[in-house]
Length: 317
Image (tube, rainbow, N blue to C red; front, side, top):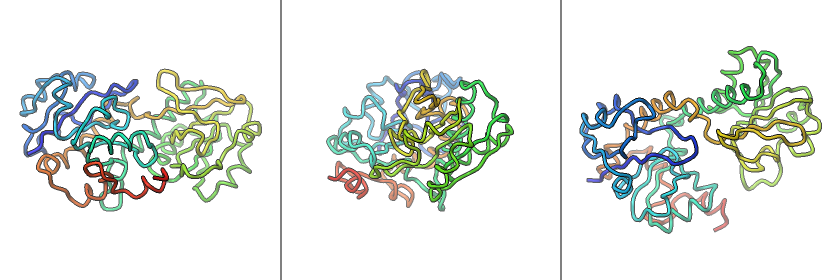
């Protein structure tokens, strides 16, 4: 049987956790789970809250020696290159990031990517994506110093993240127009009428064009803002450069840009609860070495061998 380790993320302002104590009742073998000391403190839980369910509380070094590592922001883990022959379970984005893919391959790892987990046609972590849209809007507007009800907003995208953004904007009275990925030309034509543009489109990194180019910024309203939730460097928004929670915005050609890549961590308690509710469904399978349909579809690399052909296609391997 495999043991599963839960390390504390060292990513800037990353406070989400993959496991909260109240969901341990859904795990058949909690004794196979091991958390890093202090794992739940940011959420208001102490180590004993986990230990009373049989979960082991160990050092970071011991956690990272477990056969399976579960960490929401695995792709940003400062330890990824140090793992060898283990299984990893979290957001990886190895298809779009060659450095991450190389670490997985060189370490001979088996990787299950949360971004590719779907249950009955719906993304398993849809709620976290929705929170990303909600949180980005709330944070960006607070920094911008304007209530949404004073703004006319374009939202690009119709997925879970866009839905969260629209929900937040609509609830606060913004005038919202939603564009899908087939309306790129229309977005550019109508760009000058908007106070805020929200991008929630997952960008194809093989494309060399953009929905909004640097030249388009000059056509935007004075004091306009772009909220790029997708956070692709020079992707759908050519002028986008990923930012942090500590330093979330910058100006380019007079337009404020908000490009924070892990906005759900702003509402880390809500987000952690939603993550944990999904994660516990798979812990007994992972510890026993079994797979269901969802896990099989999300396995992108096995023992260092590429299974997801997109890694080869996107990265030209």
